[in-house]
Amino acid sequence: MTFYGQERSLQTNIERQPFKQNDQSECADAREKGMESMMAPGNGNGNYSDCVLIDLNTQIDFCKAEGAYPVANRDELVPALRRVIAWVKRNRIPVVSSVESHRLWEVSNSSLPALYCIDGTPGQRKVDFTLFPNRVWIEVDNTLTVPTDLFRECQQVIFRKRTDDLLANPKADRFLTHLTAVEFVLFGNCVESAVKYLTLGLLARNRRVTVVLDACGHWDPAAADLAVRQISAKGANLITVAELVERRQISLNRYSTKSKPNGSHNGNGSEHHDSNGNGSNGHDE
Image 1 (cartoon, rainbow, N blue to C red):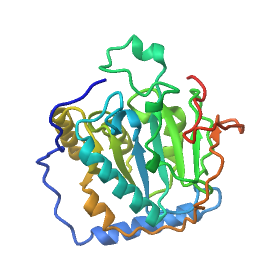
Image 2 (image 1 turned 60 degrees about the horizontal axis):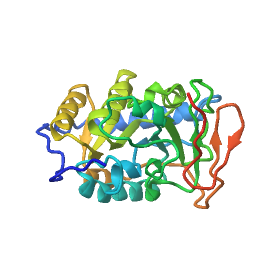
Image 3 (image 1 turned 90 degrees about the horizontal axis):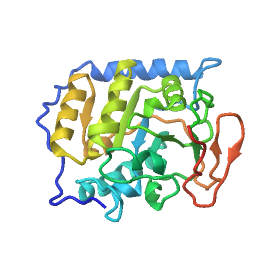
């Protein structure tokens, strides 16, 4: 088990862009266009929302002291994650989540610094408070087959991934590409890997991306600082949790707060259920 000495928050020297008077009107125009697109016949992944939250790898192995590979800023990260999740629930924002999902034989023969997020282990599970009652798991099988309207019934769509880049999962790539949203807001683990890769991938698709910096974990502060500079230079908006929770989002979603069976789609119409409340192991890629 890997632990770090002194835990510290990610510090950056990124200068914020000055507020432009036409920013508000631009956002309003984008929301109006998004609403029209969502309501058009044959379009839409569910009800319209200003933004979609993307929750990356908030798992026990990264977020708890007993985890196999806890992040260096764990003590500051977990309270920040709780504030973000509370804001999401209050504003009924749809959430795309990812979980690291490794097979033992893969990581045993790799250069990874620790064995973490192994299929079927307790550490692979998501931290409890990051799970929503209305959720669905999308299993990995190297196909593009995934319903694109899952947000009509589920608030949280969870993808498993074998690599640092969520977009390397073909189903996640297709789902995110077809989402109608003004903005993607990212948080989770870790800045120097999953957060950076997904931010750059979405920006390359001409999507608006915001990263909640103090709700992101990191292992190496220097590498994380470099990653933040890279995504900022490419056009990502950098905010804090305090700035996020001041927002009041437009959302027409009405998600049930009652728990449903934790179904997991294999993309072909069938479902798998398990009893651990944190999804099934699913298919190998």
